Structure formats: structure tokens, C-alpha cells
Image 1 (spheres, one colour):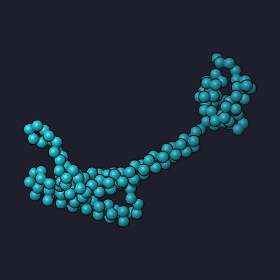
Image 2 (cartoon, one colour):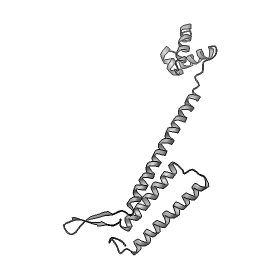
Image 3 (cartoon, one colour):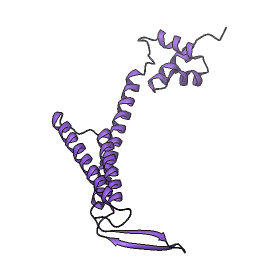
Image 4 (cartoon, one colour):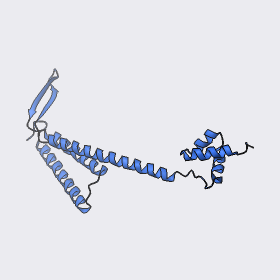
Length: 176
């Protein structure tokens, strides 16, 4: 059987509890078992509690808010990426490749990316916008759903147009 509980144990448990220490921390500090600390805490008037549910709930709420803010920031960054990609769709570009027997680098300036590249840009824009919307859904209920539907239809139409143009492209020239 362990040593009896004395007034010093009771005083230290009250002091350490008031300092915000956990039951296990108090037990280590006063060199008693956690069950002895619980017994001392229950005998205090009023009884001391080690219930940290409110503290844990507050910490969880803060963590949830932090994650929401990070998701919103990432959604904004993805939207900006989509806009930059979209700007490349009709911008002048340089297309280059190694060619010839000696493998010399050759390049050509184009008024806009080749159709195959435009299709890849459109797909990348769709991915970035879709991911952005999943991370931070558009607000507005039914109107937001209409906007998403319209954007989806527009993206599908652009993809189909690029596919149609690619079908007419005879394999690798500058497009048109």
C-alpha cells in the first residue's frame, strides 16, 4: 500500500490544478499515481475537474477555422492559376523541338498555341477552376449552381471545338 495522502499533497494538487496542469502532469510532479490525484481532486471542496472537453472543443474549432482559411487561400491561388493559364490560350508562343538527323533545336514563333496545346490549356483551366470550387464552393445557392452548369457547358464546348479543330489538323503544323 502507498503512502498516505497528506495536506501537502492536497495543497500541491490544488495549486497545480489552478495552474492548468493535467491530472497526469500533476501525478508526475507530486510523484503519485493518476488515480491518487483523481481521488484528491474529488475530495476537494468544490471537487476539482480535469474535464478538458471545452478546451479541446475550442482548439478543434480554431484548427477547423485555420484549415478553412488555408483552403480558401488555396482556392484563390488556383483561380489565379486558371486565369494565367487562360491568358496563354490566345497569346503568342514559341514552339520548339529537336529535329533532323543531328538533333538540332528548332523553334517557330506562333500567333497562338497549337490546337493540341490549347486543348491541354483548357483542360488545365477546367481542373484548376473545378478544384478551386471544391475547396471554396461558390455561394449563392441556385444561382451558383447555374453558373457552375454554364461554366461546365462552356468548358465542354471549348474542348469539343478544340477536338474538332484537331481532327482537321493534319498532324503537327501550326494549326488553323
